[in-house]
Length: 248
Length: 371
View 1 (spheres, rainbow over the protein chains, first blue to last red):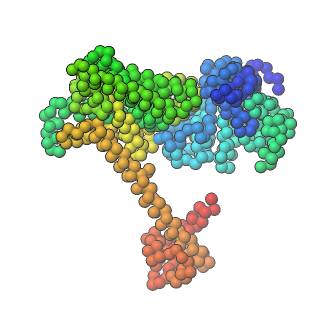
View 2: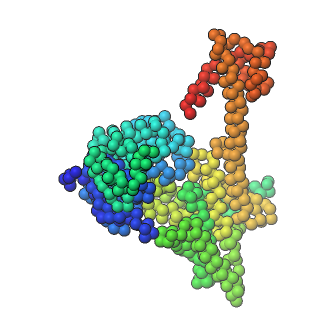
């Protein structure tokens, strides 16, 4: 578990976040080694999404600092990709699937410059990987929930980042989308990328991930799944009912 | 109508006013699309109402009724209003609608108060400020139209230049922040453009109806397209046409107040769009519903026939129509429709399935298994 500091992808120190004086995250310290596939698990309201959003500078913490490969996030935009929760946008927005995926290239383009042939090519490749190529010209409201999720994944893929943050990508998707997402995760792992996923399905944690963080406002534990994914930590995180949660 | 066209050809004032309302409509339609997609439709309403005290104050300070000077006052107080709205949303736990309502009524109240005060002043040069309540296109002069033109060209250039950033911001603000775009800057840019568009429209449409100029063309345009660029262009076109038609109606009907007429014309665009749009319109949806129901009926009958036909080696083996009798759901008309689709053949009280019909029935069967 002790990785040298060169290989730390994300380092979080003393992070505290509050909404209207109510703490949502309390004094989080976290080191995420490069190249792991990490699940963040915890009950509803544990601050899982908030943790990701604070790392990504979307939410301002009241205390603490975040480093991405040793530097503040403001200097590392291009090394990070983000898959927000599907419900965070209005899918009735007038645009097509391809157009949404192209948005992933905007960061590297910077201000004013428009995407060209090169960007379009990588967007089409990402659509292909997500199994969404046939739907590229589809208006996004005419996609199923799972397809919308895959569009968001494709958008993150074209960012060609080093670290991928995903907020509940498996939420309410069908089997084929789940398989598509897993294949993408595997491919990212092969490329030695770091992937951090807010995850709800405890049963699949050992199967999909090699690293896990238990979170419930405070950090309960973080480390390799094989070492720390056990009854003790689940109980500390979920309270005494965790077995019910798992068996459901 | 003919008289109006002749007048438009000869009357310089009418030309100026028509051009002005057209430019205004186009600019508002374009920028209004952004307000609608940001779900901040009421922001325009709050800002236009917030502009009123600025007009009155500038008059009190300078004593002039020059429209440009007054509009600078409107701009300043409109910007302060929008700044406060953002401040309330960010710093308090009040929700957006509350912040909008609060600023709208507060500023408008102060504005009306100041107008009443001005009207009671013992000064001859006081009347006429109330035209900013409902607008009066007839007071537009060449200079006003020039200002509108410059503002609309600037809005167009900014929109084209930052098209990519605006689109990303409108669709997914948080994501655009993670890419390193300064979302506050984009937000400021869009809000400023909307405030400026509102201010240049006050003289023509007035503070009370101004927001309709922003929203109506955009709402109508959204019905016809699923592409942002088309939506923005269409909204600009609807806005411009509303301006021109509205001015024409008001000029040819004893100088009806122009602002409300333009707004009503824009409203007609919305109504037509809601009903007749090919993909989102109410009419289309009803037709589709009817067709689906009818198709379902046919499928039911076809599936029943398929059950019978597949027990025979030759699927085209004819059967008596009578045997369908214990199956509710076919009528003479539905049988004819099945024949029209070449799914069955009808011959003297007998029906026989075609290969095409057999395949169609199997497809329906597969579709059912998918569920």
